[in-house]
Each structure stands twice: as structure tokens, then as C-alpha cells.
Image 1 (spheres, rainbow, N blue to C red):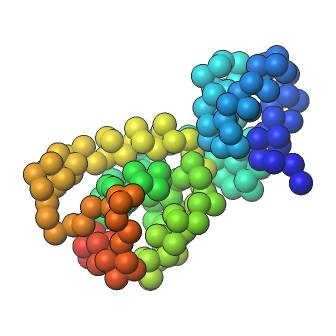
Image 2 (image 1 turned 90 degrees about the vertical axis):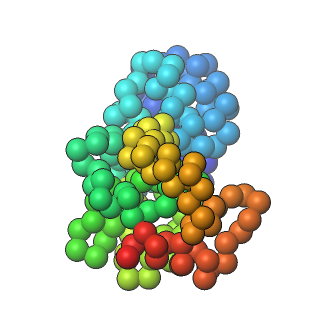
Length: 180
């Protein structure tokens, strides 16, 4: 089975928009991260964000979406703790019936899946988007909350950090504050 970046590399080579040596250098620097490889290709020029996003989405067998603030539900985003979104690099986009669609640069991340499953009555659908777009939209959507809740010491919400692992109970309690 081909590694992820080898599959992306083969698809991008077929477009014949970049020299092979440049493609190989980017693939090596990305260290098997499809998101990193895609961003390097975009920055290197010659391939558009939409082209490489579609290639990665096809390889993942998921949709790719170029995030546009018009499709992101501000109300839905505000139901999620900012630190959780930043930690797992995802942004909720919209809710249809009982399914929340989130964009992630790492759609098969097990920690993200476990965290999202804590929303017991909700089902989730994940689509691919690049990390720079996700972080940009998170910064815009959470600007006021990051300033008021976290910088002012909003004490009732435990902070998620690499140093402290929240129990399932703590995580449900934290997420429940946002979903109620």
C-alpha cells in the first residue's frame, strides 16, 4: 500500500505543474502529513489550493472544502470550547438535522473522533480543509471569547493542555457548558 504522500505525489505529478525534484523535496519535508504537503505545494506555487485540496480529499475519500465564512455557522462554532477546537485543529461548519459537520486537516485523528463522540446525542461528519484556513477562521470566530473568557480568567471551564488529560467526565462537563 502506498503511503499517503506517495499517493498525493503521484496525483500531483500527473498534473505536470511542478518539477519532480521540487515535488520530492516537499514530500520529504512534509513527513507524511497530507496537510503539510498540501500547504508546501500551495506555497511553492504552480498548484492551487482547490486543486491540491481536491486531490487530498479524494485520497481520503472525503469532501474538501475551502472554508468561506459564509458557510460557517457562527452560532454552532460558539458551542465548542475554543481550546478544544485549537487543540484538535477543527472547526464546526454547520448542523443538518442531528449531524454536525466539522472541517479538519487531520480527519482520521483518533483523539478528535473520541472528543467529538463525547457529544452523545450528536453525530458528526468530517470533511478535509487545510490547517491555515481552520486556524484563521477559529481566530476570527473566537476573538471576543478568547479575550473575555480566557484572558479574564473564566474559571469554570477547565483548560485543555498537553500537561493535563481530562477525564471523560470532565470533558463531558466542559462540553456540556457549551452545548446547553
